[in-house]
Length: 301
Image (cartoon, rainbow, N blue to C red; front, side, top):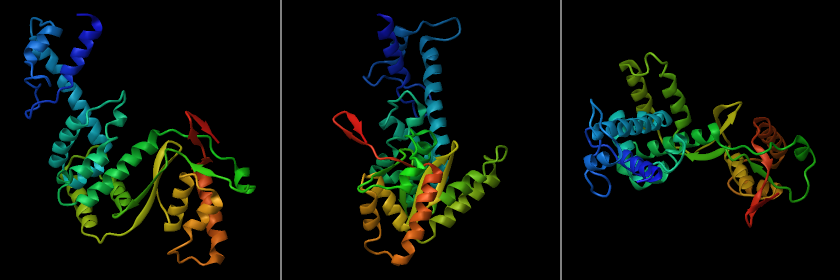
């Protein structure tokens, strides 16, 4: 057996989900004895069998995955409860195993998976799904790519049919609950020494109950970053619509007409001031970039 085959067998054995007791699985995914598989790729020593040595790597791998997943979704854990979150995380990672070189991508399929498995979300299903969407957007905002920021002269001297795009790390969310406020409140309870205390737990539970019992509402939030810090910014309905049109490549003028076409309470006299303020804020945050459309394997501006 060459080195590459040994590495592949080692990785496959190590990545088999742990047992319910948190120990290495008794069998591989192909149904082979894990003890026999371990003996084929690892030598025992004077203190540990081959299986025991493999178990160290397997448990380290899975505990690191679970710890990282919990760090990424503290708000979701608070909403559905620690024990329920732990069960959900294990099930999700079994069904959607890591396929990336970075732990950052662990939750990439979580929203779709939760939508298909709502029983994992407990009594506050819609609140939990909103929180999961916000927290994945937080991850994207933190280290997502950034294109060249639009020069101010593009805004001062627009041309007919001009198209403006949004930075790929900016996520636009339509929510039913103020999970942006809830996540900030949850994080505020985690002051290091007392984050696992009963007091912190009660504060989190109280915040979740308060939001969970509130009436659903339509909220628009942009999740973005400024100077390596992630922020949540509430948006006006028309502002949200216009940003969505810009992201899809709609020309600026057409996007403005569509955003204010129906259902708006804005009067025409307000529009110049509103648009000046919005575009000024978006430019200040660095959200705006020249729209790019991929065509036949290359990007055209």
